[in-house]
Image (cartoon, rainbow, N blue to C red):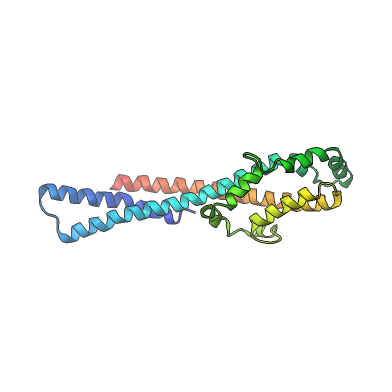
Length: 211
């Protein structure tokens, strides 16, 4: 995840070269080669920071995906509780909590609920671009790519089928499976990204000590 950000490790050396040039000016004239080297290294600082920002945005995308899928579990609590190994119990739950289930879908796009979070993610290309390459465990749950459109379609389809248990159950089973797969993927990527970031910071501290 932090492949681009590794350029940030060049910053301490670039700053040292620049400080060396400043000290040369204090005591005499630096050579043209030394001046050019310092200018090139200082120019790399901006590039390194830009690349670091890109990789940081990738981690933000996974965090937003994780937050949205967690929120969906909360917002559709009674809906997802319908899914289970016992058909009779599932149908009884559907009948008993049908009003609550319909309300869950009616309020899904309000405030900070999952529907709004999904729309926010879909309408932010700089985040969505990092969520295009999905592992097989997620791709197999996506009936019709892209995943965010498939998820949105399933939400709308489930809402439209709130009065038909058979169709509702089939759709919600797909919806729940996709949400779980996305949540697990985002969780894995966040943990991986944090671990890589910690390693990157350790290397940066070592470079600062050497500079």
